[in-house]
Length: 233
Ligand SMILES: *Cc1c(COP(=O)(O)O)cnc(C)c1O
Image (cartoon, rainbow, N blue to C red; front, side):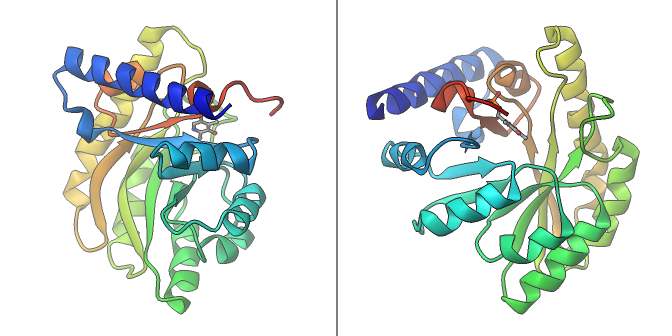
């Protein structure tokens, strides 16, 4: 098992290097967040042993439990799932990144909770690039308002945008959706001021990270290719 996760990480890094070479990009620009949802703590510890430090979860409760149980200072925890205002209080105690902000009210709550703990939480604004109703995220045209509001916050740092393409769609469609996120990112750089400093584009998962890197991703969120298939969802 140990060997499997290490080997998977190695193979993944080789694939990242290969697509970077093809796209004329530096692999050092691509940050890997290992999505460990529904996987046991032991798998996270194995990946940590192989040099993986960033981990992501998509359920607030599961993240909270793992952050408590796995007491490793070197881990950087990301939340990538559906936001719930009442979970933010507990989340900010340990989380480093919240990737799924799509309303001002979540930033307001993070500001309030994080200020009491004297922390600064990195966030990404999640954009619904696939247009599917069941996907979270704001519309591309709503990003500017969220950024303007965040500029003056002291305990939130907006570091970029996040998006999910239609699952297992044909590559052209996926590519168009990633282009939309990149385009939204470029258009909103004019809001870089104060706590808003757009530098990251979080896009690409096991199925589509190669297309995402070709389209400018700087952060990929990969679960299955590292930890294997999930039992249920
Ligand atoms: C599950 C999940 C991923 C990773 O998915 P894989 O297909 O297993 O790589 C990435 N991002 C989010 C938001 C997820 O919920």
